[in-house]
View (spheres, helix red, strand yellow):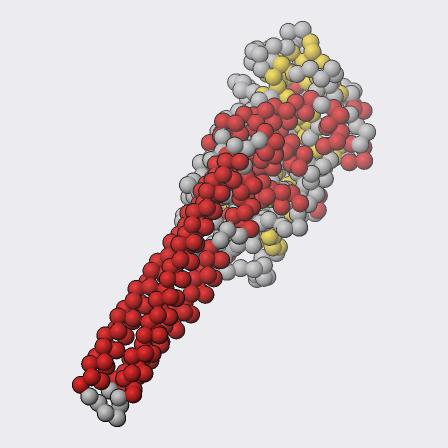
Length: 590
């Protein structure tokens, strides 16, 4: 009997020990469930959020108080059970030498008491566990309203917040639209599309395209495999390869200025996220380029020498030889599938993205762009989006990101667009921006990133081309209700030994002015005629003025439409460009 009672006592002791040891863990669980710095910080988002957080805190305190009471009750019940068990066990032990009927009865009573104490202890433990669970649940519920209020309040962005968001996002929105529109137009990613003639007014994928070179547009998806461009030698005085991702920083890794394209060449492109590749040399590949994004455009511009028909045909044939192949294909294997991704919708205009799906687009951009923690513009962009629930490396979830006022964001983007376009008529601003647009990362201020993204994405840096604007002398808009003439003497011609052009666009969209003659620019490739002294007069008019060569007439449609005229000067003499002044557009009677 002593053995049986001892075993019962031991069982109870174990149970009691568990209950007592569980009490401190309850206190620890309570401490862990209390709002820490993250919750406390979220209470600073506004008065409404602070009130809700205070109510949640009160609920937690009440749950903690109830748990403490349960713990105290458990302790008292367990201690009482211990004392009773001791008494019964002691009484039973005294009778071990003379087991009588009374001893058996007391042993039976001791067993029942121990059973009841054991059951009571288990019950108390279950209640204590339940109380702890309720405390943790209360803490989670207390945190949830705070998060929701943060998101809701972040949707009520101040005017300054919206302005900051649009200005820092514009380069990404513009390039997301441009690169993805071209990919859609030419049949997808890892494709190249080569021009066989100069662009015309049906071109709508990008603002202010040129009408003086032929393009080869290659859209590359670098996620699954590096992509290699195979390029032939070109019989042209000017060729350049421009690379840019969604961040709109421009790199020109190859150019005739650098003595490239004199022989066939291959260049491999990859990003920090390209699967299975980390920049190592590849046999048969001449150059390797790490891009800043997974989805990039690699664009070749080729002077076509259109006045030399045989040379033009030769160049077009060479352009057809440019190919984009994945590393797997380059090694004789099958291309890896790249159809496992869905792209957010593009906008007809950048304002459409700002108004309709900005957070979705920016989440996609964040997931496929390399950001530098040491770059101030990168840090400030990410900081602007983090409170909205958009951070790199996570899927887009409309239910979890902030609810922003799309109409307000759109309106601000449209206002900023108009303000940046107005700078096109600001001669002083052009002196400032002329040499500093379209550069690599780390070499551009936000002001010029914004301007270049509005005025016309993916241009060339000044070492390749300069883009002076032709304006009126008094800064008034160039409007299609009037005719204009632009005059340059031989001494006033653009300073370049390669070529230049002058192209007319509608101001609002940056598209060519539609006309039956498909005449959008004046220059060596689109046609021009110098006067006997080596100068030129270019007319912008609804009807060709008498005596003006066809090549020097840019047709317009007589209506109230603002226009802009952009010069392109390829491989300009940058020293002379510091003092050279672009001509003005002079109003003439219709």
